[in-house]
Image (cartoon, rainbow, N blue to C red; front, top):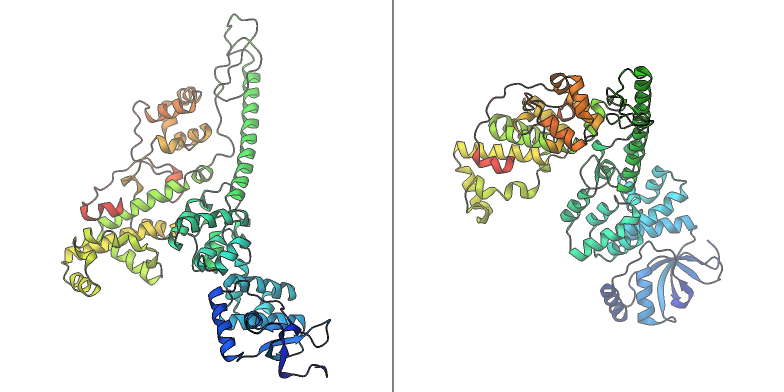
Length: 530
């Protein structure tokens, strides 16, 4: 302390007080007016905390009390005097005191706290443990606030002004900063609540399971929904990337590398075929030169004259069961969820087991609120949704054993649809012997996802190449992709029913045809399990 600035409470003219750093950016006008009226009526009852100004004698800088200062200037004018507590403080001590005062009073918004936390973290040389200790925050709270610091200024202002809720901000924190303002316009313009905002964001995310690239970096990326889930109560489903630009760039890089590998392999095969044949397989076309037909390989036309007819496309080195599975992850997941839902609807004992596992692992809450309530009239009776809660309890207690079984089956089916982790779906399907062939078989939409080389891989593992013979299939492979798929689906004497390519299987292995037991009729839950 200095002799000229004693500690304790003193009356100081407002003209000698300056605003210091304040974590808060937003001040509610209505509350400000109320405070001005209160000051005029009763005066300032609670002193402001100030510290001596560094460059002006007998002047002070506010540490805590910025809202009271603004109201006092309006109520009393610059010459009005207000009570203050004067303390000698370093810049860091003043910063921490300002943050703590606003945090304890619960006046600062989450983003205001976030920006303040960034300043404290910088002062602590990015030591989060020390920053949390100085702020008096848990590590989880510090991490959450720092995550919100990445919001755009427009989004921060919207939260400060209470035009959006914290849940909106948490979801937007998972979006790259250059996309946040546009998303904010949609949220405010359409009046989207948090649930609808989450659904909107889910539609523009990318499933990491579908990624063709190495996902090592994704494990610690702030745009990995798993990272968001660890921070916030409001988040998108696990296993999603919320940075579409980065996802697409990495995908394009991998695909370009694959194309280069494939083109190199095809050129090498074409060259080898020409050298091996050396005219043995040639037919004189009567033209001035020789024409090499590499339609089956996609290699460029070189030379003139006779046609090399036995050049066949090769399966590129990048085509594996794992690589083709990456192209159909979304279809595989959706189809297995449907198969499990129907399987649980068909088997009440398995449905009950699934519900118990879900409840005891804390994942039963994954069932979306509207999934069952929207079907309550179907599951119980038409008037059930409109009854009071007490009446609903009574009606549920009077359900027959058959009705209760149907409701439990429906709950199990709903869990299969809504549980966030597909790994849970896979484990349940394996445990209950669910077979995807009850709801799916190879069709055109599935095959159109793949390149010619990948289609050859699928045809090989499913037995079509062996059925047709290699020469006949090589000829078919030389056709346009659409004709190739038509030929595969309509091959004489070959039935795709019951064949599950490795890309659709849970264990990554091809499933050959086998007889399946007929599904039990469960008309009441058919809509839910469909």
